[in-house]
Image (cartoon, rainbow, N blue to C red; front, side, top):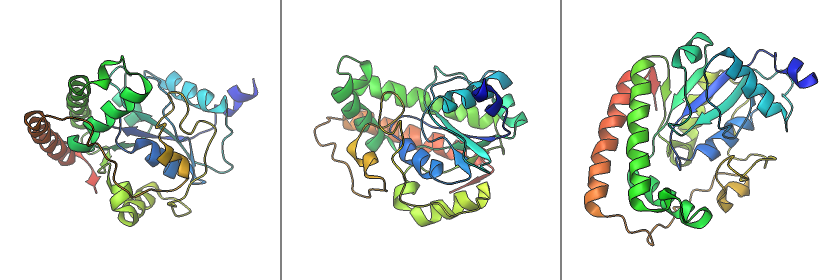
Length: 246
């Protein structure tokens, strides 16, 4: 009953629309460490109506409490199986971010993750991971077209490789009272279950700038070239639809 009352708190949603292995767990932890923002992990819910926004809060309140004087609640949506009512997000003035990472890093990262956590899953193969990535980018492009001038775009790697600019960009557009930090607190759901990235780097509590090694993943050059062209095309299309981009 208490959680149901708290769930009525007026919090503006921050919704990150992206794909797997796009630094989204790091992104969520950086944002979620700020006193203005609740949430840091993937809630794995769809957004159909205003009831979904209440459900989002209730799900968060199962293991957390809202920060005093906070004004946002964060979630990320990375899979086509989760429905997103874009009109709902616009009507509720959600702060929407779309973010992409290039295929030469993303596809091997997906394969490597699933080979470790679920070897029988289709995403543990290059073909399965590639199909997911290709289809997800198409969906994100469709979202961008429906959300024209209603979202911001930021490259997934900016949080690691353009940290200062990325922080300034987000602080300005979210109107945060305190600066974002490269260090963050390890939370209850950090790296656990389906909440996000299970890698050791996320457990460090800070941005790790080292490059991952995917030399053990054999990504055919023809496939990579095709997906790179697709990424460049989709990225350009999304940016053309964005309100502002970094």
